[in-house]
Length: 153
Image (cartoon, rainbow, N blue to C red; front, side, top):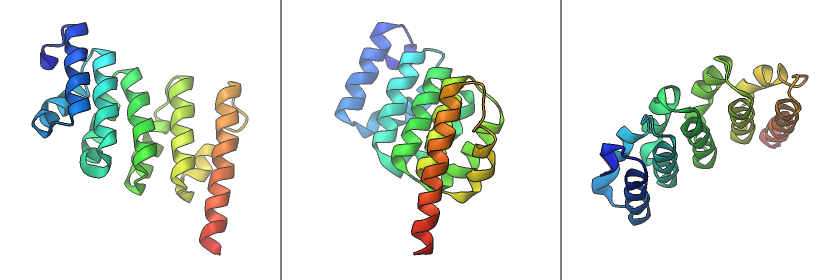
């Protein structure tokens, strides 16, 4: 049902499968990350992120090919997983340019990951015309500065 991508019935099936954490559904769920049905993609991205690092690679692989709403969910999921392997792909993703919500969500995630490789890129957003992007860039830089101080101690 989920793979048929027929509106409400598909996302209801995805919700049920994600709540049950049935491993038999994982491969189908991974394929749904790039579904053109945005709610379905979001549900699946949230569910796979809940497994932690188990499906990290699938989330990263789907990121550039997902719908906008699914991309936001994937980026937020990568923040919760907190795996440093996401830093370089997220930097590249941020450099590709996206709408404001996806931009500041990616900046927020990079700040939370605490990797200094993101500092120079995030600095370019501090004076952005969009107040939300500028605010998240400043907050991310504060997090990165704190992470850097923690490493020094």
